[in-house]
Image (tube, rainbow, N blue to C red; front, side):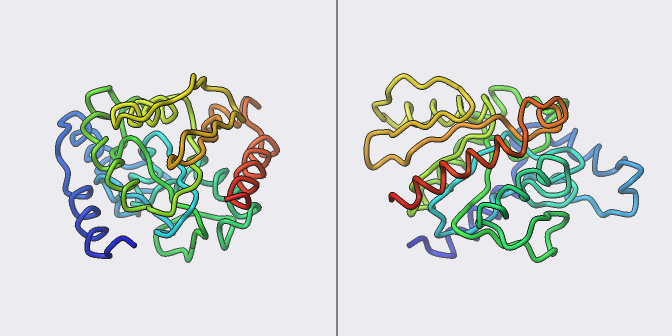
Length: 230
């Protein structure tokens, strides 16, 4: 079982990170200028650590904090449309105690699930560069190592899928042919967890109908089945 001191140290290192000058400048600019709807908020404006159940069997990997979502609230998938969609799905699947995720102290608790991302700072146009994601990769590696109960990884979006696949390859894992396809499920060589794939619950996807709540529910049905089997 991971030592709480290891989690505390990792969180402190993530929050203090200034490895990517472009992202530091952007996240702080957004935090100062704010969006009119959030002008009374004290924006987080720093890198965002993972959030959830540290004994989780499900790890959900997204792309990066949203400029006026997690960059404002300081918690993954909190305060924006993507977070709203994902949290409702988690609640329907029995993995969250409530269907809303608005701010860090709103009482949200995840059950058997942990949220993280391949980049920890809000990037301009939601597009971190390869070098920026490389700078963040060590944090994800350390989180995954601490999350020793993981049985299923859910990759949200192609970039999260590709980065996780490359991470495993870099660690020397032997992988089958992995293709990004919504709803795909890959049983990887033990002790690696199963990998489930979904479109990212971004507004771009949900408002165009590329990803519906029913489609996301089907993904979590598959996740729950894998967890039950485990």
